[in-house]
Amino acid sequence: MNQISLAQSGFELAHKRTRKRVFLDEMDQVIPWSDLLALIAPHAPAGKTGRPPFALQTMLRIHLLQQFFGHSDPAMEEALHDIPLYREFAHLDAGLTRLPDESTILRFRHLLEQHQLALQILASVNARLMARGLLLKSGTVVDATLIAAPSSTKNKDGQRDPEMHQTKKGNQWHFGMKAHIGGDADSGLVHTVATTAANAHDITQAHALLHGEEDVVFADSGYRGVEKRDEVQELHPDSCWHIAMMPGKRKALDKSKALDALIDQLETIKARIRAKVEHPFRVIKCQFGHRKVRYKGLAKNTSQLLVMFALSNLWMVRKRILQGQQA
Image 1: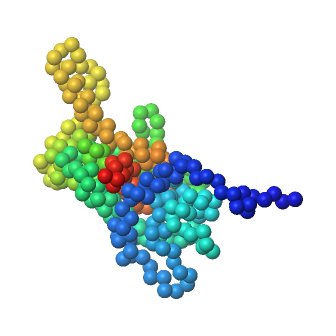
Image 2: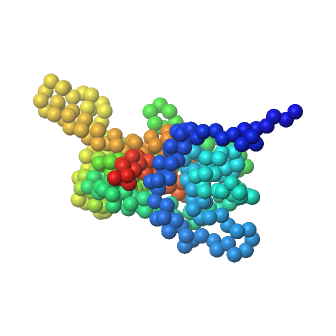
Image 3: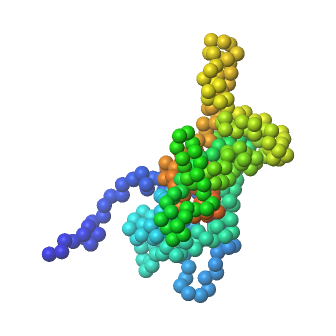
């Protein structure tokens, strides 16, 4: 005899506020949907032939779900079938006879990449945060992080991604890319993103991480001598750089001497400011689980990172935005 399921019996389980539901509810309230849809709508296909297209907001919501939970296009299609919470967030009605397949999800991602809309999404989110007074322009902190790429050559081409390279950090070799960011010195929110292969030195992208309106810039010891570089002197001649002292040199300071003790205190203050730029890296790697590149080549991965840093900005200040909405 077949057992009757809870759904068939009409019994409804009480909704538990799981962490995933709380997370999606909070992000749903802080994401500026109207602004983002206004950016994408002019580039959306007309859909005059064939099956009617899914709503633009639905496709955007699915794309953001991929960034939140690290799903590939095929995995996202399956997740929409398996997880009611995802369908609810994507505004997919229970009465639909079909759900977006992986090809539909892929085409929407290609739409964003083709028209470079990811950069506009980050700019739109930051404009909204700036209007709320959450993103300032007086100071910038620059830093970079490694993101791994598959190093195996067991693929159709028999080679690794030619746009990725290896670099040595400490005593360990890493293969992949680097994400360079410029963040607000007050809040740690990201305003500029650049990407390179892993073997590019951090200092080569320093000039590209400034918006031009900051008075001071903070960076770790890897950026020593940045103020002397031609591109920095040409583009940002008035910026005052505060570069961390080399760890070995700081360790050699004599804390019993007044001058050395003062220098150590100054380095501590600079370190506290620089620490804020690590928060967005923690969000995309730990909160969103983006520890390895998903696509081949820098262009597609850059587009994804721009969207993820826009979402990380919203996640980092979500409590303050929600408090402002309730006030």
